[in-house]
Image (cartoon, rainbow, N blue to C red; front, side, top):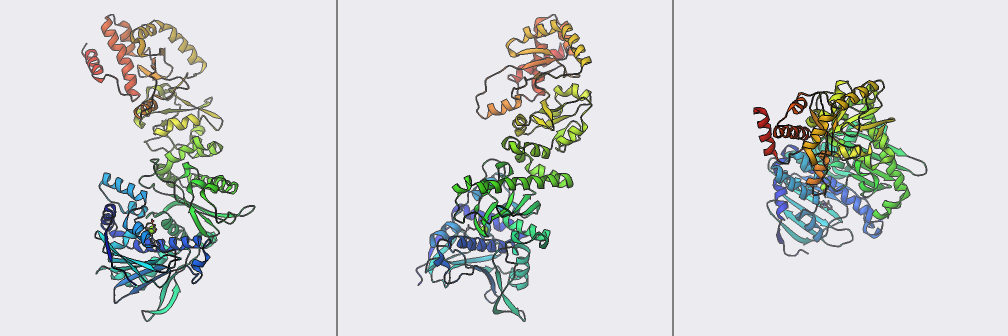
Length: 619
Ligand code: ADP
Ligand code: MG
């Protein structure tokens, strides 16, 4: 039976992906084999799961397997599986359109970036299309489990494909590549075997190839991979290469994982977890739109679903891996997972494992940890707010820029800070700002700096929010240098009191001149070099965060800032001695405006500021 062949066009995006893939994967072209084997393995996983409800689907041939074979005459390479197969509609949906929203986003990002990166492509499920890097024609024949007839899909990857109903001898899918003229290496059995060994050894199903005799294939098949789920093997039997190979298939990352932790828990509840921390973030990671995926739940070796959201909190969403439970029921649903006590315990254990792992890397492999921090530090920070139970552990893993360290790279831990605290210092000081430069140059930290007190410099958007939850570490309070009163020692307090009294007239006059523009004017304990700065009450939101919220459409009530002044500064002396009212007003406004600029604010009326500045410079 073979109905008339139907020709269809690829969805526009598919054509685009095909073009990108064939033009950017050439240096990694052998990955097509890994992708085909991975699809075949997924198909076997699906059938194993569905056959629980439909045992008759595997009654005739229960062995789930993958076969790789070549026809040197015809110059074809075939990858075949006895998995779930595809119906006509499924083949159209899966191979003729881009079903995955991840791929769509990838395309959006690419058209913005105007460049294709093989590393990115790998992550976005464009797996099947990688066949067109080495083949000028690909045909897929498939028969879905439970059906009696099949379908053939064929394309040269140029914009169209054909579909025909055909007889297919057995359940599953066969992908046949008609190799391009210069791709003969993929007809060599040993090339294919070494690729399987490198990329697909840990695939849990047997991968078979024909036995060779005198360099020619025989009718006998032999298994060419270990064919056991990697995570079920004892740690002692696994090499770093084994772990990295498994990571690559799991994550579609071309690069190595940064670190991993492999554990078997036995007791009330038995499960195995293998959790990886990647070295690099996927391109659209952490923008809040990414679907949470990357942690696969197996139950007694049967793949159930991606259960990242159920098994890990959002702040560990960079983790990739596998959890295999011996105890959960196979028919478990997402809803059940959400409120299952066993799952809760597995989740708790996974969190602990990942934090232990990060702890170990932070302690023993500083460079690796810096890489991790650069890629995922901002994600981990969310845990300070979200996971109160592990707050202290997560806080230990945080890294900051600081007035005591060179450069902008965050490398100082809270333990480093506490270890360096001065005698009598009982507060961990920090400042938040829009940028590292703004934080570092803040006038508010002058007095602390002049006394050699270290200040942590925070300039990521999330920092102010995080700091709201991180009020204490190792029994020490964390304090924002621009918020609230700064307590100094007794001698300083005396001096401050005296200088406050001496400047009371000056303060009053500034208040009069600035009027509504300020909530208050105070003599500062923070300043040594600068004439003025803005400060906040202890529980006020940082000014830069107010700006962000306002820009993103939040209703922020206007609130005038508190201006602190340094009466010893020449500009304040000048203001004091200025008898001309207009010029005194110019000076007062400049004191306020420069404090705003130093803090990173946009001035309400920059042109007026410039005119004022010029009048004072020339006056
Ligand atoms: P991904 O595997 O990331 O989903 P692919 O491009 O590799 O992306 O495959 C697209 C889809 O085609 C798969 O999701 C699957 O539904 C289907 N598919 C591919 N190969 C097979 C196969 N051997 N058996 C069954 N379905 C397959
Ligand atoms: Mg795939």
